[in-house]
Amino acid sequence: MRLSSDYYRYRDGAWSFWFHREKWQPSLWPVVLALIEKQPSSKHPQTLPVKASLDVGSDGLFLKVFHGCSGVSAIKDIFRDSKAFRSMHQAASLQRLNFKVPITVAAGEKREHRLLRKAFVLTIAVEGQSLPALLGQDAGVHSISLFEKRNALKHLALEVRRLHESGFVHGDLVPTNIFVSRSPGNESVFFFMDNDRTHRSPQWIPHTLWRRNLVALNRIPLPGVTLQDRVRFLGHYLGLKEWGNKERQLLAWLERKTRKRRKECDSVDSSVSFRQLMRWPGQLT
Image 1 (cartoon, rainbow, N blue to C red):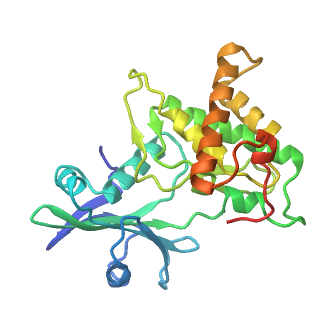
Image 2 (image 1 turned 60 degrees about the vertical axis):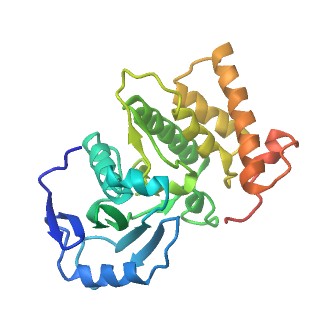
């Protein structure tokens, strides 16, 4: 995958980097390295805010730290880029197609004898809120009207469809990985976050992995989102004017998979009615 001329590559000992020519500042590296070294080894990446008095033109920076794997995964990592580099490249690919993603300031990986030890990606904070946080905010001057909610759900459905039509499948398209930026008088803008497991296949290759994204989006109960809203979302995603047997089969499949995932991930009783299963419990986790 290619990067734009906005980025340049640099090596320093065991570390290999990509830096944004305008956003990166050398004084960031000691701050970033100190945060990386403080993180205990974990199979899960860690995301941290970066406190630095730097003019990056945003509300701040976020650092995502990856640790080297063991076993078969460690051998695979010898022959492939780190998740940090893959995240940066996928974000660049998405940006070229006018999808909204966080701007990558820098990405780096540390290798010893080709074995991946650590990696990181540093991004500019998005001026917005996660989808669950936005929907769950208290009523008041910033509350969402019914019209805005339905219009936003339609816009999101069309963006997810465009994502899949472009050959992308997001690695973890849960509602918390969708950030929403709002401004008075304008449509909501949706950002796709955490793209280290996002991948793109040639559009001529048939695949059904996009269904995983629909299950991930549907699994979490959300404040103010009704069962009818979920059906409307799927209708907008499919571009339907009316429901046929094929679309109803997909809807039934999505319900079965959602029930299964809710039982596995949230340890809830999935035998209740689907309306009750997807009812928001009144608090955000």
